[in-house]
Image 1 (tube, rainbow, N blue to C red):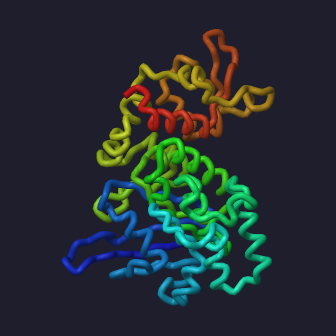
Image 2 (cartoon, helix red, strand yellow):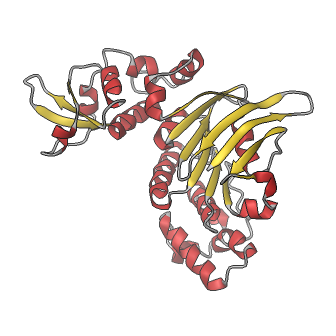
Image 3 (cartoon, rainbow, N blue to C red):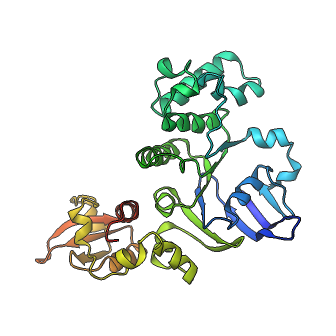
Length: 329
């Protein structure tokens, strides 16, 4: 677990980048920091691996102060993925991936096997990509290599600082899907910084929205969408055309999820498991409220026949798609 205890970062001009942050990030959690430029999210991320020193307060990793770790020991166990991919241009892909394992003095066969495993994991054929130079890869392929390089020495924590923001929309969406699927397999603690609400919704187990160095709201995607706690949170969501025209516009009904195939087909088992039953004509907001208290909701047509089961993942996929595509804007 990563624990922030009254963490503050001040600069020489007395500007406060992070202001008395108290926060726990659980083992295996995909945790997303989001907020406008200058809110302190990247500074918070960089303090975890001591790229930026704290002014006051303490960060703990597994209940040990980060200041008590040897700096090399700390960073070897924390993978780091940047927006600027920063592959070494004159080193092959395999050599780029092997940097930290070699520093940790792994034997050559172990490094070779690990490189093969990681390239296969992100859909890059080792036989084709191992000996290529970074300039021979597309931007999306380079970023995949950047991700697996961070995973090479099997760290327990991965820090990702807006890693996909420089990519074209198609590559970005594909990498979001890839990292989401990858996390299901590797179950690392991932701390991810973005300014993109669609990306936060698509990836995060929890989302921490920051403003002026402080946490404004930290919660699951569902709860932030259902219950934005301040006007700032609501305005931030509205900036993506999400809240007023999707969640709280009563003209948007459950039928739209069904029409666009965002639902789980009803089977003999899952319809009876749902504690709530709604109609296709009910507003989307009512579905959000129901899913806050149930794993799934059964949808009925005008005759009362069960025709679909909506789960939280279905709703989030629909909302994420709306935000990305600008539907209803």
